[in-house]
Length: 426
Image 1 (cartoon, one colour):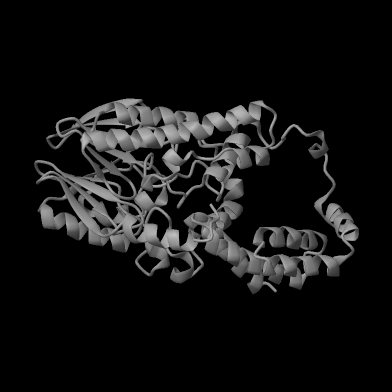
Image 2 (tube, one colour):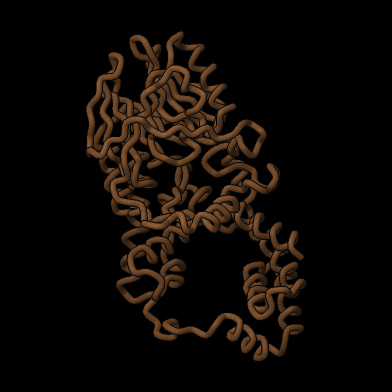
């Protein structure tokens, strides 16, 4: 979300959303670790061993986690549970391999699209931009739902280890070293997401299906469609547990049944509203951009501190839903066979009085603080001539302006990264 105070809002959120903190959830049994990695980790102390839920993002940070565990338990980690397969939750696993732990995960509830590896190059590039891997700490600030990953701060590398036990069931009950726990499929942000429920203590580990800001219902790095309706059903499932402690994979734990139910219900209802209103607009024949402009989060939810647009945004969510349900075609036959972008650009530039006239308009737009209009005009010149240096310089200038207005860390990173790429290739 673009706001004049966007940069300051993101700074303020980052300063308080994930401080270094070890929370003793159940004395002597359950602990939650936040702020020591991009993601959180939790551990459960059994009769003779420790059950670790997620492993942070790098080996060095996992070594710190190992030290934290040793402070509370002189017992080996013999079980690791991955809440899901994102790298920041399993990047430290290699540090715990000397005890030969069982590593538990759930299989995706629906298959990954075939041939996704054919997109590795472009998806990696977009992921690097979204996460701000190639920009400075000052430029990046944070990664939205956590501190920057260790691999960009000289704090180790990823040490992945594949799971040794993969469940395809909806629900599994296990007793591990005297600890009874329920593992259940919880598709939402990912299709392999699971939840962990400890009924004896009413503690619920929810992975990334809740974290304290507007979620990535769509990730700008590109990913398989995240089924928002299913995510809402999973939130209903989380609410139904009536947990007394909710331990998310990012940001603060929530303690107390009343606070958990209120927070998850608001989170669920806000997402449901955006999904419902987007589908309503689509059914009325609105285009993707018309729906994205029309659907806004009502103030009763937008004002809540755990629904700020510091990671995903409502507008990206609307566009992701639109594409997920009906694909690229917006129903306008003009768009069935559009002119090639270069030809359309050349004709547009001619109507505008030539390239110099467009450059003048871009300069004026930047002076008037109309950065979005400036970069759209710059794109017309670049489409007609991919080597147009002045247009690229203007575009980079506009991207840097927009980056500083964006409350979303992901959006900020993408703007800054692309601006730097443009300037580096002049």
